[in-house]
Length: 182
Image (cartoon, rainbow, N blue to C red):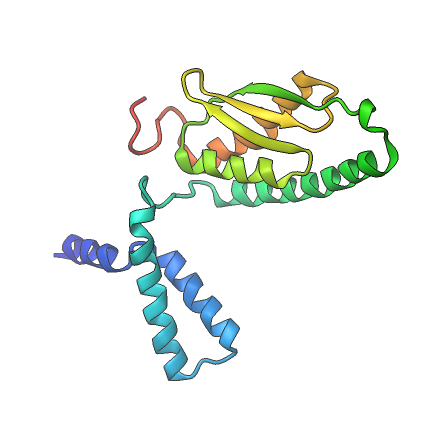
């Protein structure tokens, strides 16, 4: 009977952590914990994930290592700031003809759709880089770099600083992510 209740609960609240976060955000935005706000915020916190469920073709992501995610986001924040300063310096202080703008291909081991989405967000948030395409036949990322000096450095940076931690967060060692065959 305990398993059946858990299944029913999951059907009505597919992502409890998301629902709790939405309720907390609602209460913070309204700066109130009055019963009416609790009731409306609770209803929205349950309804939003249920209504968004069809938009999640691979289901909700499971973070296998939340601390690795925090380290990744911290490193990405530092890289975004560093890249912002670098791109600003290039734009303000260098001539256009001195900029070496190129496309590169980065081989990927990452297979998780949620991990690939996060990698795309991180790359596109970093000034000077743009995720152009994922080449599925070779599982390579086509990346545009605003000022490329060392292609091997870029490939190594994407693979070790981004892809490695993302695999750690979304995939378990030796096992393909849910819904994929190894």
